[in-house]
Image 1 (tube, helix red, strand yellow):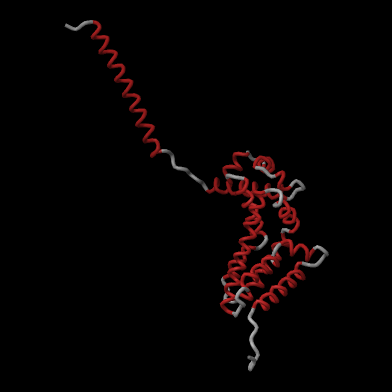
Image 2 (cartoon, helix red, strand yellow):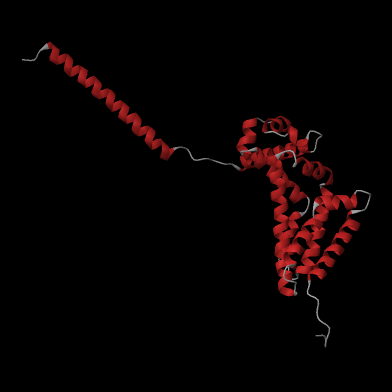
Length: 248
């Protein structure tokens, strides 16, 4: 004999079972949605738009760095306001202030002609390569002279910016080190000469040195000729002196 309470218990159990089934089905649907979520679709139009946005952000960042405020007024929010986008857009594109700084430097490097360096480094004559590299950096320093002066000065007061500038300068040092090692293979250099030569060439090809040479109105080409001459003299002094024939 079935009692009323038993009927109610059965109904209550059925309700719980149905609810459990619905929860389980929802769980399965959510789990599989990880695998069947819509794939990202990047149309050519969307890619072009994103590229233009990125370029606008970099241009805005460069413009801020070129103002009197310079690095002190440089922030993701300030760049976003200047570019006419949200701070989140800037963050999604670059992720950090340092990465945005690097993007500005990369853009300046391309526009200033540093992209010519790989072709020069592929050459077989390290002496000629050195002179060409000096010419490329002279062109670059001249191209960005108005902006590079304040930017280099700002590195002393802003640790993050200073780190970016030092990293860029170390790339130049590594480049010169490769050329000096090639020179050492082709020519007989004094034992300690390679290290000293790298330091001298690093100083000669720096922006402060170029800036001093052009401060009084000297042209870029005239400054470049001087630097190339000094570099050639430095290479000559780094070479071993050959003993005269018959000398002890």
